[in-house]
Image (cartoon, rainbow, N blue to C red; front, side, top):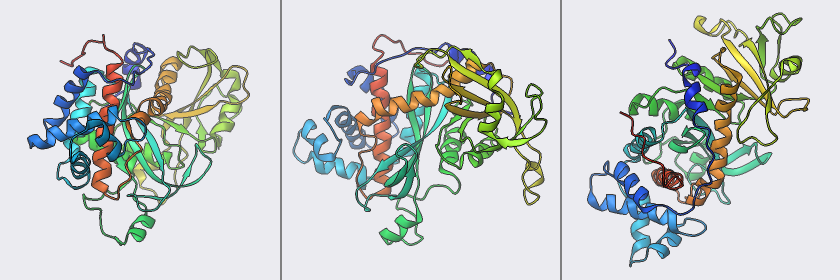
Length: 403
C-alpha cells in the first residue's frame, strides 16, 4: 500500500504558487524563533549559545563563510578558536538539530513534497573530508570535489534542506590513511546516500509521507526510485533519455509493448503534447505529453517480486515549438493531471534556484576542514541559516502551525 498519492497533493501543490525574492537580511525575530526550535536539543547552555552565534556569523559575514570571516563580524577575543572548536571538536549531535529544523518547516511552511537534490562542492586540494574525482553534469567534466545529497522540504513558496548525506569515496579513505576505518563520527548507513537521507528522516523523525521528487542528475536514478517504491514512497524522478522503458499505453498506436529509450517514446508521443500553464517558467505555457509505460522486466537473477514490470507514467516537458522535451520525468502514479505533475517536477527547479540564491550566500559549500563531524555540523547550521533567510522574506507571513 502506498503511503501517499500524488492526487491527494494536487491542492497543496497548486495553492502554493507564490514567487518570492529572498531578502539577504535575516529578521531577528525569525532567527530567535529558529534557534528556539533547533537548539533546545543541545544539552549544554554554552552549546546553545555557540550555536546561535555560529548561525549569526553565517548570516552576517560577507563573502565566504570562513571561521575567520565570521569571527571578524561577531567580534570578541578568542571567537575564532571557540567557533572552530564548536564545529570540529565539540561533541554535540547534529541529527536532533536537523530533526528540529525539519519539524519547524513542516509546522510553519507545510511542504508539498520532499526533493532529493545533489550538491557538488569543488575543492582545490585533497585534504577536505570526502574529496574525490566526480563527474559534474552541470560542468560537463570531472572535478575534484565533495559530493553530497540533500533532502529538501519544498513547495512553490518555500524550500529548505533538512537532511544531508556525504559520499565518502574509497580514494578519500586511501589518501587520508584511514584504510577501511569509518569516519570519527560514524560512517553513513550502507546503501545509496539519497535513499538513506530520505529513510532516516521518515522513519526516525516522524515526518509526513509526501511524494519524493528525485533530481539527482545521475545514472543511478532507477535504483533510487526502486528503493523508494519498496519503502512505499510515491516518486517523480527526472531521468535521462536513454533509459529503456516498455510502452503500455493504447494512445500510442503502433507501438504495442515495444521497449524503447525514454526520449524515443516521447518523440513518438509528440502529437499527444498539450500546453499546460507553468507559473514562473519562462516562455509561457509548457508543452507536456504523458505516456503510460512499464519498467522492463529484470533478468531471472532478480527476486521474483521484482520480475513483473511496474506500471509507471513517463512525461516530457518542453518549450512550445521545440522538437524534443527539455526534461523527462518518471512516476509511479499514472492518473494525476498534467498541471499537478508539472508543478511537482517544478519543485526540483525551485530547489535549484534557492541553492544559488540563498544557500550559497549562507555558506552551504564553505566548510574546508578535514572533520567528517565538522562537515555535518556546518551544513546543518547553514541549512538553518537558509530557513532563516527564506522565512524572513515573508515578514508579514503568519505562522501556519500544524494542529
